[in-house]
Length: 330
Image (tube, rainbow, N blue to C red; front, top):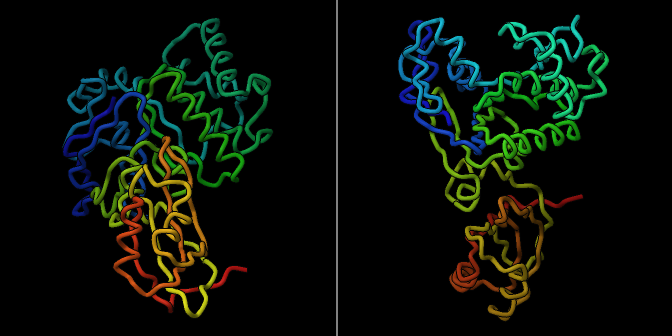
């Protein structure tokens, strides 16, 4: 596990990270999101002690890395693997040679290094690309080589700094699937830094939003998505255009706030109200065995309180839609 305690980083008079406190357990993926300039990259550098924090602590498996001297820190850093935004591969080295770099620095024998590199490339699905150079690999394959290199020293913590940025959707899905698989198989604690909200929904157990160096909101992914008042939860599920209701109907925006919402809630709502209910648009999915999402509906009744109570009994938050925001999908 990794824990940050009051982690602060100043550059001159500018505070880039302001007393960050959070922990990531083994087997957990903790996503950190935030706007450009929020401090995400500095967080990645300070969490690995590549950039020394101004104050605060980085604790890995109970060991406070912030209090170690240079020699001790070189050893302790082996517990943390890093996946970089731009794979960070050396263009004149093959995939195998890139993966072997940490082992070479550690003084591992060539025979043992060869065995470990073969094991890692097989683990990330690239055993047939050992002799390929980075320019001969796709973006997703290069990132897989970077992941293999990050695992070379058998870390217990993995820090992913915008690892899927710039990848196409298929490559992103492949890398996300691999990271989740490695988390499960190796019981890793993973800090996943990204600006891609769709990726967060597909990979994270917990999420924090960083803004101007501070964590302004955090929590488990499902709880955030079930909280209609959560700004972070709303940003993780952006609203999309929907069809317009008929002139006589009232439009409502509803969101799942419970894991117990029945699958046929639209028909149950219509039966409870004795009115016609139409589904105008929806974004609903299952994450961590819990259904999350939102929908826009129209109801042929102007009895707002009855509609709210009926939706509440079904585990749904209800907010009447402002007519000026209606739009029609193509």
